[in-house]
Image (cartoon, rainbow, N blue to C red; front, top):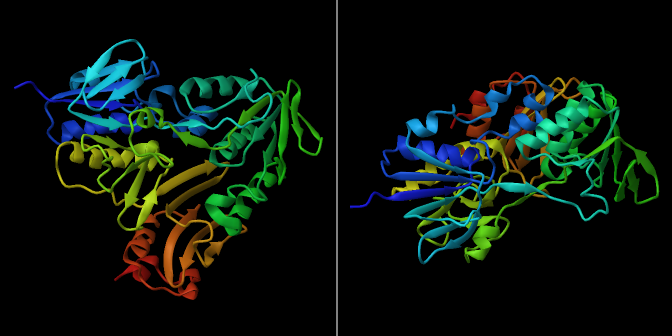
Length: 405
């Protein structure tokens, strides 16, 4: 019999870990990993953190050593993208004119930076951060300019801002919402990040609109001019669903998949930033553009490709490092979906844990400069253990005991 061929479209973290998971789970057929970029798979968090700031070496961003793919008989097709998908023929068409047949297919196409409909958003001095080349170009910028404007106060925008300030660059952040990270964290915790950046000398302009990017900076909706030598745009990302749409797969804020990461085609799965997956514990579909999903979902995707029962049940998790603040967040609290936020610790000193509650149950938790508490927070969320705000706020009540069934 001809060996089965599994094809992975997208050579990022999710794609690379899927190839690894397939081999670990005993698949001995052919694996082809297709990537539009010329580099072997690498991780993206360092691009706005350590690699951007020069504290992480370039070699550390890659998922596997250079020889790993040959050693594990994984065929890399880099520098070419998938242009079409013929589901009936089980064939992926490539931009270089070639085509690859598959028995099972994984879509790990990721996301792309959102480009705002602003005149000048595509000017040469405007930077977006997604690829390793973007990071290296931005590193050069931070070493050569004195004034930077950042449009968007999300995770990418704020991490770039922190790197720029630590490089001695004056930064103005422009955000349409009344607080940074408002939709993600809510007003209670978003204020912490506003104060953090202002304490580090950032000119944080909130509730503003950008009408134009000019050669000398940014023009706001009220006519105010912000002078800048370079512009970074970080206004979110969009899942790369073009291939799935053209193939007729169900798409809704990403490729729609079940808990096993299976699309409505039984021979196609999706993982990472592009996957909008049903979460058995949360009871809703969730698409998370964070490192942990790309790292962990591939094990489930690989099992599903191999015909085994599997479900992705990990709670959403993300982290950030900005200045002297380190943070981890676990769980899922939609805007308007929680009743209150309870703090344990010293918020002013930025050493605390925040809990998002619905009634007496914890939906999410975030630890700021407090460590080794993620597991009990996960247990509180998973078990739905009833807990009072007073108990959560009391540092004398160990979280492990509160989380005990």
